[in-house]
Image 1 (cartoon, chains in turn purple, brown, green, red):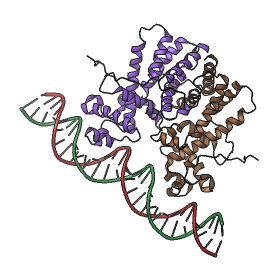
Image 2 (cartoon, rainbow over the protein chains, first blue to last red):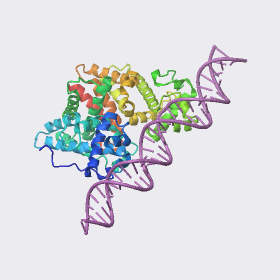
Image 3 (cartoon, rainbow over the protein chains, first blue to last red):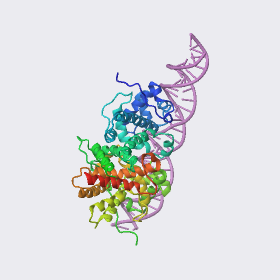
Length: 224
Length: 224
DNA sequence: ACAAATATAATAGTATTACTATCGTTTTAG
DNA sequence: CTAAAACGATAGTAATACTATTATATTTGT
C-alpha cells in the first residue's frame, strides 16, 4: 500500500467548507494546483477553474473566500507536509549538524517525485511554492491574516529548524533570520537561475543553490 | 546649492514619453510614489493617480504603458541612484573589506533622509523598493522584459558589489548569489520584522538586519 | 423509506479594473 | 503665426471578482 493513513489538519479559518470533506472539494484543490502551474497565479481565476472541473464559479466560492485564500490554503498544506517530511527525515539522527544539513536539503530543493501522499501532486505544488509563495504573505491584509493563523504552518517549519540551529550554536543570535533567509533565498535563486541569471551563479547540473546555503549556514554557525 | 546637476539616464523602453521631459511627467512619477506608499501597489490605479494630479487616466497612459511598467521605471530609478550612491561611498577607499561593508550597509538599510537629489522622495521610494520590489520581476513576462533591459540597473548594482566580493576572495564561487541574497533577504527581513516577527530575530533599535548580513558575508568569504 | 436539510448547477447581475478611442482645446516650437 | 504635439473630457469595452436567486439533486437522520 502506497497511501498513508494520515491526513494533514489545516487551519479551519482557511475555508468555508472543508475541501477534504467531499470529492468536489478535493478536485477543486488538486485542479487548482495544476491550473496555477499552467497559468500563473495572476491569470488563474475561479471561472477558469470552474470550466476545468465542470462546475460554476459560485460553487467554488462556497469552499474558498477567494483565490488568494485558496493559495494560502495550498501553501499551508505544503508547509504542513514539509514539517512532517522534516520530522521523518531527522528523527533518530543524533548529530545536530547532520540534521540541519538534511533540513536544508529539504528546504532548498524542489520536490521531484510525487509521493502520492494524497490527491495533491506534490511536484506541482512545490513548483507553486517556489514561484508564487511570496504572494501569500505579501498582501495588505498580512496582519489580519497572520492573526487568523494563516501562516502558522510556515512559522512552525522555521521554528523547528531554528531549534536545530540553536542546538548547534546556542549563542547564535539570528536562528529564525537565518532559516527564513535560506528558504526564501533558495526559492528566489531558483527563479533567478531560470529568468535572471545575472543575479545568480548556478550551473544547471549542480546543486549549487543547496551547496551555497549549506556553506553559508555552517560557516556562520561555526564562527559566530 | 543642494541640487546636483546630474540626471539619471533610464532605459527608454520603459516609457512612451520621457516623464523627465515635462512637469506633468515629473508629477506623475513623484505622486505615484506617494500614492503607492499609501495604497500599496495592488490598490494603486491610474484612475486614482489621475485624481491626485488632476488629469484623466488617459493622459497617464501616454507616458507609461501600464502601472506595472511605471513600477519598473521607479525601481530602475532607485537602482540607478543606488549604483551612484555605491560609487560615491566607495571611491578612494583602498580596503576591499571596508568597501564591501559600506556597500552592504547601503543595500540593507532603508533610506532615512531625502537627499533632494531630484523631484523624487527617496525615503518613500526606498519604502516601495523594500516592500514591493518583488512584484517587479515576479511576473509572467519576466523574460520578455529582461530582454528589453528592464532590470539592467539592478543587475548593474549586483555586478558592482560582486566585483568587490571577488576582489576579497577570488576563489569564491557564488558572488552574485551572495549579493542578491543579501539584498532580497534584507528587504524581506524588514517586512518580516514588521508583520511576521516569528520569521526573524530583530530588535527594533538595533541594526540587526545589516549586522546579520555582514556577518554572513564575511564569514563566508573568509572561510571558503 | 421519507421528510428535511444540505449541496450543487444554472443563470444573472454589479462594481471595479485596465485599458482604448475620439475629439476639441491648449500649449509649444520653429 | 502656424503646425504639431500635448492635454482634458468623455465614452466605451472586455475581463475580473465577486453576490444573488432559484431549481434540482443528494445526503442524512429517524
